[in-house]
Image 1 (cartoon, rainbow, N blue to C red):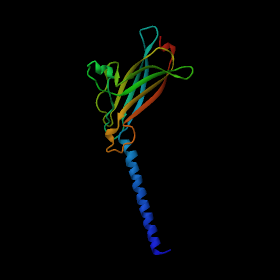
Image 2 (cartoon, helix red, strand yellow):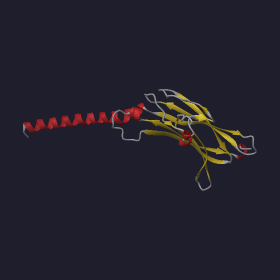
Image 3 (spheres, one colour):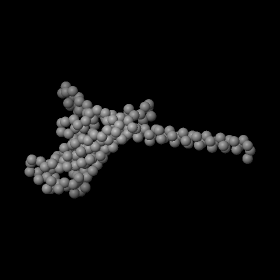
Image 4 (cartoon, rainbow, N blue to C red):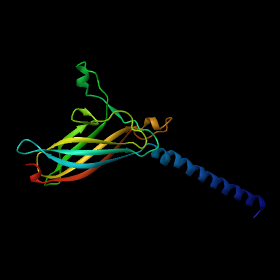
Length: 193
């Protein structure tokens, strides 16, 4: 081998090593670190049955915990009242898009929607408004109607507007990211009477 071939091989390997290092760092910044900055933990913390005043039926209290474990303040995604309310000259009130859904699992293992609530509210009372700051935990109670014994699936999901965490036009995912959690809950007949 000539000295020129050896030098060109050394230069080629050095440039290749540097480019791999820069590419790996760019990937870390673009995909991993950026997603860590905007992150929440969502879990269903507690379920409890309250007997109703009627002969059958009860209320299921579902308490949801939302925790901002990222490095940045989060802006939850705003959703608006349906258009039909806006047409009645009512003020369109903005609320944060979240939903808890209660499904009953029938004998054929199919999910039957029983009840749901949209928004960070319990009944008609708003439980939370504003931004979700770093390290902050919020706990939101939902009361759902339940009439039959059996196994239920509780699903909770909340949307975050991710566009404020990505500068420029390189954001290829959907601008709204949904965090969700699910849990099963068994209701006995004696809990409803």
